[in-house]
Image (tube, rainbow, N blue to C red; front, side, top):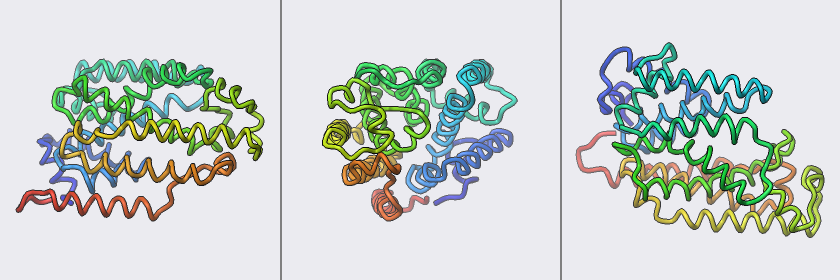
Length: 309
């Protein structure tokens, strides 16, 4: 793995101020979400790493503002952030090094700015005012408004000029699966925080109440509901098959690892059953380590002779 300085150079980032900005961003991501940062550093092609790190940092910043404080505080914070981001994208400058780096990444990689504005708008509506889903259609609207553009403000930076229609559609399938797995794995914590992330109509279909879930009642109806939800998540994960063909070669090991880990986590939810209502479901330590080592070995085999990193 090349040094961070060499990684910046590989991406063509040579100006001292910009290098400092990207270094600030990398440290921020490492503190907040070490797993994605380490995965990028280990598995992604070095020229892509700074752009994608800036994308992760921006995505995290918007998520944090959208999820912090009262609804009024969230809305006010997102309005300020949207104005700051718009100014940074327009001028290429900002008092915030994170926004400077992200604006530079967007401009250099040619990511269409509508993905950024769509994500910020979705944060202010679908996420900041989130109160659950009545139906599957509401869940799909949430993906369109927030989760899909949220993943593309990050992964879209892999493509020079942004994703084409087919690539964007593949990421829509990916985020559908990822969100379903995430909601199931985090059921316990979300319910404790007052968030029900399963459509209320599906609870009604199984004659399950919110109290049944909050109190982790082990009943045939609750088990049937959870089994049905994991089947939906499994089908969504199966629908992501083929996404690697639409990912830039330098990012394929990262996405292969992410997809494999999603499968591990979903399998853990399936095994947990009603226990998923009592404790959030992770994928432990062994599966991620094995996945990263296997992906790293595969990346090394694919690297042309003489190429460092």
